[in-house]
Image: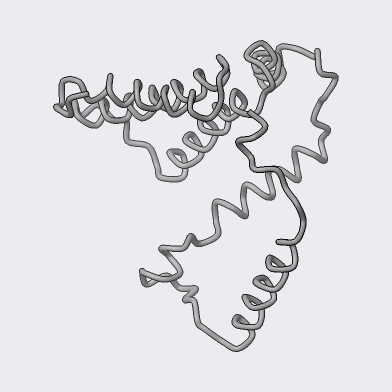
Length: 166
């Protein structure tokens, strides 16, 4: 495709659109891949021309989280039209699905988002001088071994390969 700066954004969008089609043959998969390509390409353009807005890190993380999760609506929806129904419901313009968040649902989601965004990530735990340092212990070893045994026991359950459903 030519990897020079001039064609970089176009190539990213094209490649991500193809990745969307690789996951499934529908407009919703093409939209999912294309949206990811547009977001990545926009990021490259904004950084290249030095017009990337300076926001606090937590806002950048939150904004990215919302954008990426919104694009996943296209991936998980059975059809392109249904993804728009979900999007309309997502932003509050439709009640076609009959699903509405209650106050307790919003509270639970906010608590989990708070936990997710305040917990250290893997780089913090292993590679930096984060106050909560990861320390190996026998308890941690037993826990990991228990997870391994659980995963091993689940291997006898027959599950359809994910791409067979496409």
